[in-house]
Image (cartoon, rainbow, N blue to C red; front, side):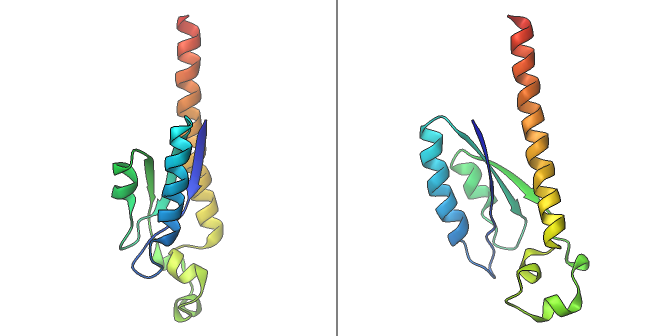
Length: 115
């Protein structure tokens, strides 16, 4: 079973979200699941740690120019630390998930055809 996990870590927001998700992913891996982390490439990201723990990590870019100036002024604003409009984030994350799911389906079909 493939499980997508969308979480971020950075100098600004900390790494608690990723660490808690890693604990969950480690337990799921023991049960046979394959976890795919989708994270923005913020300063202080934990993409390498995720990979070192045996999980797939997909990096999304940070595109600050898509953010309005008023959002950057509010440090507590979700969009200001996310680096993109939340709708763009959802689209980017779904794109990664669909791409990975299609690759796995293609491999499965190839195995079926060979048997």
